[in-house]
Length: 235
Image (cartoon, rainbow, N blue to C red):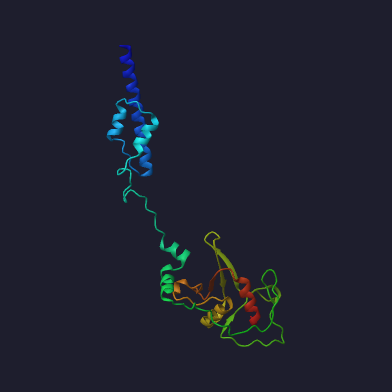
């Protein structure tokens, strides 16, 4: 009687341990998206009280040919990149690939040439102020004009209305040019030549814009370059 009760208790303990192992294997298979055949006849026979070790249990439960192969639906599919990420990283890879296959070499758009050359070399202070050209320097007539700031003490020469601003929590800088008169389109054309900014095919991707009120806005911090250019022209 004692031997029978010990065998029964041992069989019960082995059965409970087998059920725990089955649950752990099912959790692991769910996380890895790979099904395990823990309900097959081999595992059931082990639960009945056979004299197999735990290493044989793991070996027999994990070596199953057809049921352990994940289906295409169970395989993890990598998420696609967005169109913005593709454009930022590869810059239209489809067009570049077709150009390489067809042997086409596209010519990039070039900025226009500078029409009006500087008439003198101004000296710029650290605060951005620059004097007017000397009296002996002849200032030609331009199709555009830039007026300096006024209301200075003792009728002093004001600053050029060129300002650098930050946008989007400091992640984007842009330059503003105010008090531009005359032909603003000619001014923008000359500004493109000085800053070497070509005209894009899509107007929405243009880095130079004319805002309401005649303010010229440029993407990027070009305040120093624009001040030197305007002061060199005699403004």
